Image 1 (cartoon, rainbow, N blue to C red):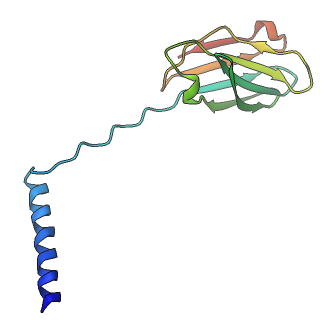
Image 2 (image 1 turned 180 degrees about the vertical axis):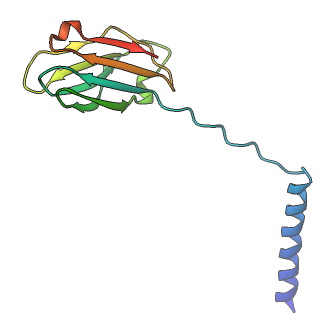
Image 3 (image 1 turned 60 degrees about the vertical axis):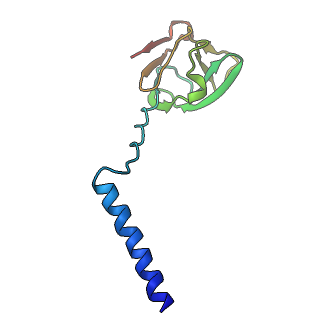
Length: 129
């Protein structure tokens, strides 16, 4: 007999909760939509394969490698996107000590960055969209 009364009590609780939710009694706030991450599209017009890094405030994060004469897209880590201090993109050829550091840029979630690495590194460019 106690099993039946326990089952009836559980069913009553479930029905009450369903009735409250459908009548607007108990509601939870919808989850906030996650912002799309910022991305950097790297076009490597250099003859060498490049390692690409994001640098901000003394912290450096490797984004990945881009083969010669190709384009690759990377997600920019949230740690590089803060209101204090701009970040820079760094292109480092695999077979050289030379490197190119972009001008400072501020990037926010959802933005797209275009980083063009040229054969003469000094004329490489960066743009934020």
